[in-house]
Length: 498
Image 1 (tube, rainbow, N blue to C red):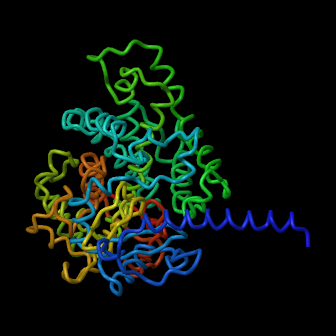
Image 2: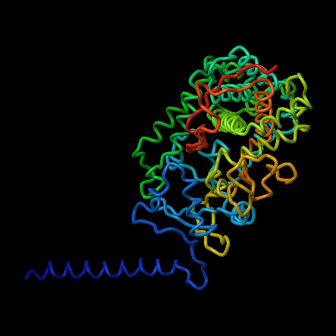
Image 3: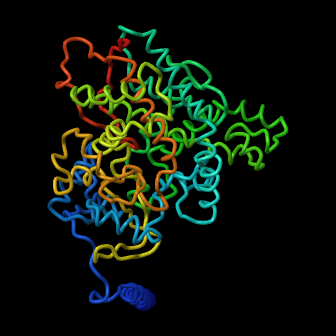
């Protein structure tokens, strides 16, 4: 026997044991006594390595709602190695979005967007991972330069003009088949592009300066719905194994290229505070670079899809519920007569508002809202939410809970006429725009544009399904990535109403 080899082996074993003991001590020290630390929320069995990710299917909001009936209004799951906590009741939503708003105010940002060179991370309100000073600056820019009452009021005629252009286009298409989603996208895009750049980006055929923009936005959203390995397994952070980062950056470059010439042309002009006419002028007046401006302008990508989707769902539900359609038309005729719909009419149209609210209850654009992240450990409903946990609020489950809503699967706008429920995120049984500091910043605009669009489409046109399809046969299945869309887009035939 070689004594030297034995001595070296014993020495290695000795130091290995010392090292193992040291790490064991650190781990045990970091674990709080069970008696002082509430348990994690209950949840379904989590499979090794993959967790519960393969249980979600194509409709995670529906799956999570079913699981909540078994495991309770606050439950925990594993997506890969990530802990995900889901609230599915008004009480859970209130604790997540109000009581623990600060502790759970982080945003889940894809790992690929956190690497050096990302064009979005902490430069766009949605992609800021914490509510820090930078986030407050971005929020203030949107609040004062895009969604303030003063700006909203100054652009009333612009929004009315864009909706009337849609009515004019559809009048020329009477008797022909149109794709509701695409005309809604075009109208919403031009409303926002005029607010941002004072120009249309597309026409109702998808042509123009922003040709291809619809596909860029849809492709970017589809990427957001694909589970990323580096997000499921943080140990892989820094790796772009699925090419997500490369694909996303390519899409963003194409989107930014749409307005780069507009930005450069405006930059050559002197911007005077008194002569500002849109969001672009405001940003240039702040001295921002293109790298700072581009992510701020990207806000409309989420706005136009949610606006278009809600309009499509509303028209679909009204077609399936002809009695409701007639009630709405009677209200419009009484208040508006033969005139076009104006924003000033909206406050006098309570049934229209109820129809939009009911559409958002049944078909919220973000059924799980946007994921939150625990910036610090906290306690929710008597359970521990560890730091960096991902936290979801299943608004879809809450809005279809039979203990809260009578006949929850039916389209009944009347339920909102005397309910007092609004969009402001203070009634946690109804929060289509979220609540708390991470509430959707586009609420002031969406609450004007969607009712104006729906009212105009209903007031000026009768709508018919192609072929022999009956309204009761319309496929109501959904697809979800970032926005919940109708799986089979609506193709309808408009005819001018007499």
